[in-house]
Image: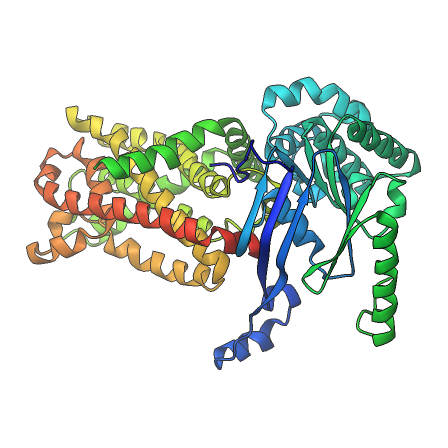
Length: 266
Length: 269
């Protein structure tokens, strides 16, 4: 029973039907520790659920590359996780035609006490690669991440940049027909970013479907041919990238004027 | 009997086989981490239960020598009982931390959520298997050889595996939703140690209470482990049947609860 159940007969690559997800916001997400526990002790409900997304229906066709835009806390990550199946919707269904590769939070999956080689096998395994596939992709992965001389050293000392590169290289070895990613899709220094972009572009022309959540769509230089804007738990715009960006700018302005979102600039 | 067997196959044997490579990696890594942390490494897996058995043997035969507790030789009796207990208590307390340890893994992995529970269960089982030489040492020390019923020893291991798996699913799912459960589990474990026939045999307690005591699934499992050395343990066979039934019930309810809470677990990560 894999987490992703596939529907080979589906017309579109991904199909969201009336999807809703209710996330409990409370102690864990917002901190609060002792005071919260005390409140709970006296019977106050400390964890109230809120609909991060509700009534979301959309479909993504094969070969499309979609930018998922929105303000902070607009449910972009949840949207991606629902697409990848690492979150199960409370309402509605998400159906997939082909295997979806989630490139979310990848760098954090590495084990600190393991060597580079072990980490490659581990992350590859978590992304659904069998060890023999990892083995055949190994030279390319190390070469891409520039870790060839250090392959049997511990990853502990490596910089965040190196980890990102390594995670990216491993994810790219999966070769999934659908890639669901956050900023992880383009990482590293300037030179490496170029490389990431070129690779993404190559994949796109080869027919890979992309679903990418980003704050800076410019970074992806015309990779996208569609944008979905999430706001207040639903899709508020779905169409050309330029329209989506214009709407996002409006939303940001409105929000800064209202003063609700202080740290929008990242 | 068919339904539990089919469930055990689908959720145990098959899922492990399909993901054997990732699981092997995860389990080896966890073991490696533990064994490289200490100077004596693997030796601790033997020394710890051995020391514990020695202490208990000293207290109950030398200090409180009057009562006839358990079966003779008592040192072997303790050694055979303490290892599965160790497996049980470690497995249970670790299960509570299954989804707290590395939520990032849950967020990005496409593997079935159960894999994380199975990983914890397998690590505890591997530790148990690695500590089995303790039984050999105890056999040498007491110059005792097992009878033909020792064939039930591996059966006990399999039964305990499914008990641990069911419990781990219950506890892991519960602890992901209610964090306080991890604390409660610790207290309950303490009580379980004295309520389980680790230090004594089920035959030591009053006949009327035996049926109630047999609700504890460890009664049946410990019995199966011991039958090979003490054939008289077979007299309590009906009680083992009760324990076995409870084990099956725990396994099935673990599957049901886990399935029901899977969405919540993923949300909490």
